[in-house]
Image (cartoon, rainbow over all chains, first blue to last red; front, side, top):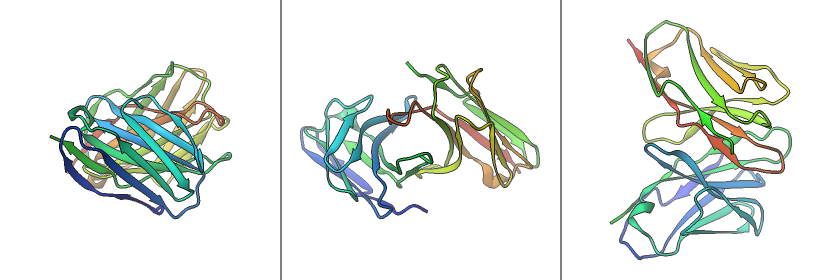
Length: 113
Length: 113
């Protein structure tokens, strides 16, 4: 299994509070991604990073920000959590080049009350 | 806009049967296509990656094919087993420089013992 960890694995928070989710990789892959998975919507890209300090928006980026100060860490921040952000969040990594296979972390289940 | 569709959403087959899962996409200008499995409450596990120049990839009892011109991919599972029960997702990458990946909503497969 690719070395990807996510923390925390479960979190319950209240509306309006800031939340930060962490993704850590030991594979030295260049690309890192944050997805959310919801019933009826499938997996949707929130933000991705193509290098340290290089990030771009995905399909559902509103209400989320990201930072990547080191190759191995990619942080997802919910500035002011809302109930619509209750979801399962997955981090993924891939190496640049021809073989762009994506590997996923175990996920973080976030509940916003 | 690229759309990825997986039909049917759910499928039940008796153990031992061969089966085919379908994935279709609307824009044939893809870089590669990846098949994943997801067990309940878990992350995604990569099964097969097919580059746009390839027609098929095989891994054990799994064979994935790609027909870009018709916008279709299939995942063939031979001699199905109860352990194959999971949700299977396909994802297409639009280009090597545009690193966004679009997922289908998956087919939930149940192998009947």
